[in-house]
Length: 242
Image 1 (cartoon, rainbow, N blue to C red):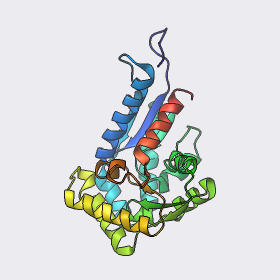
Image 2 (cartoon, rainbow, N blue to C red):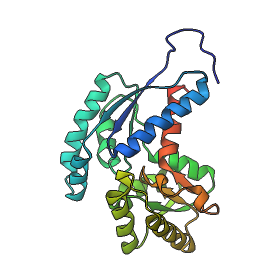
Image 3 (cartoon, rainbow, N blue to C red):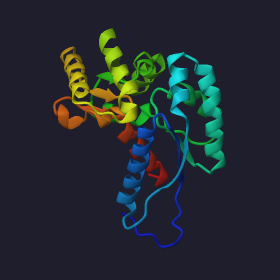
């Protein structure tokens, strides 16, 4: 905890590319402010800029594999974040890193890739083979697989085709609406159990809404890596210059 000596308190502005979904965006806002308040104490929290997109557009682009259109759409939203003074940018969606990563590669504003704090946490835990749950596009992403393997030495496993379809359906039909169903939680835990039996040493909750449904307490013996919490923790550390 720090004790500010001057007001206004100097701090970096965190830019959040949100709306993918609005539920994940709300959790990012909560976690960023809680993380900064835990460091600052008192009444202090974050200086945050959010540009929230229409999830209907994102759902269409993902379902129709219109990735070029998605990149053009989100590039304009990143422009808005930069104009608003963001010192660092986060994208709240694992899936949309497919287009946001190349957008940010052409810019100078720092960008925290969601896979990096997750990969660092898995490496620190000494894990080498981890299951990935997320949207269909995330689970099939070769870019994410390579990033985890090449940068962090973690082999990525994905569920069977039938289980991938179940995970994806629950995300799009339920979790993005914060529709949290006990039967869906049971299905996710069954999938996690199957992957652990197949050799997964842990599980990446690779959609930023999954932790709303399942978390570490549900399977204490299977390490779970909550990409939402790890991503926001990394942003807090960046904002504080840690």
